[in-house]
Image (cartoon, rainbow, N blue to C red; front, side, top):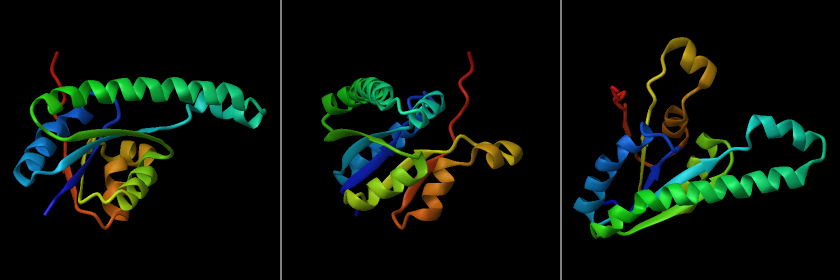
Length: 151
């Protein structure tokens, strides 16, 4: 039923709470996991783009991509050691749209993502990547509201 599961991560420990669920589904179906992180141009650099500083943006995006790859590989390593087939990917764009497009063009059978659980004004102002993915993708979505970690 599922042969490729897209696990959407944003670099936060909250987003990583989807991993046990996605890994269990992958094990049960013998599916491959793809760990994905979407990179956005930081708003502080958007103004530089308008002023023709493309080289600064390119350098910053290379740095962000390197850090994202290191992060994803760090998560992938223990999963691989446990016998799972795992690949990683980083892409640029608006997270909701980028996830939907990547999933549609990469033979993904299931998208796994957390919802940060914003309500009311927070959701109106910030939107919800998970909500966008559920509304705009025809691929099944496994979502989980993460638990806030107590310190």
